[in-house]
Length: 353
Image (cartoon, rainbow, N blue to C red):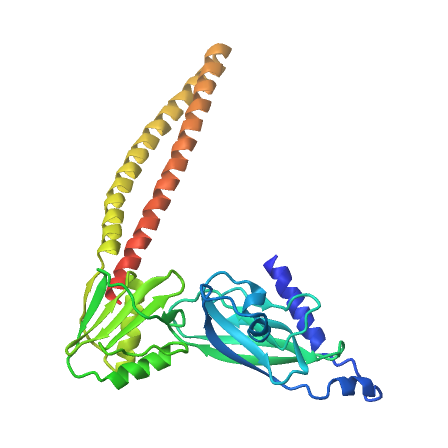
């Protein structure tokens, strides 16, 4: 279904680039008079905010789409009221799927908002193809390509105050870090409105992907980052130190919740090993038993003893079903072990990042 949708979008874009009007058709030229370009801007859509009025919805396009979750939003706006936007196709280099947004059927709008899927904590390039034309012109359409850089922490938005949590990462500083350096990093890696340091030299943020609190505090001799996610803390530390020009710096981290999960995963790995060894021993015994049943069935066939031969093949069939069932259990046990090792390695990677 996704591939079919992509093909349909490509066909529409190719058809839109074909100008059906000729020099001898002044009506099409007249319809295209006053058609300008389009502009795009990134922002944050807060679903919990009060619903806008009907006039505001016409210009922002928030209430018209009825999006129920906080998200990063791309707003495409025409330069004048004579331009109508027909479709916006967004491609992100970190996502495999494209996002296609069209206005409501039989609706004419000069503003279209696209809610982007959650992204990882890394800078990416967003490319959008906008199909637009003049109001009243049904044959002549234009396609404009727009490229926008998405900041690394576009999903983190400033908030009034966040609750303190037990999970934190402390960076002891060897030199003096000024507020202007942190402010420059915030302006570079976050979306507008840019987070600011308050009177306590603290930045309060919220992750719109899972509503988790994030706190960054600048102290005299250290920087404290509080967040429940060790992966997000590692990404913040890497980005901040790169912006400050620090290549090597130790840190002290405490994430009790994720450490408890890692310890639970580590306890399950020996159990998987024990189950795997037991199933391997059972399989060896069953293999020897199957070989003996085959010899019995063959001897009974040579002696033309049909009763013992049928009994031997019946037992062999039952044993084969048991071996297949244990093989499935062994495959599931091995898959659980591999998944546990992946979780443990990811935890180690996040802790050493």
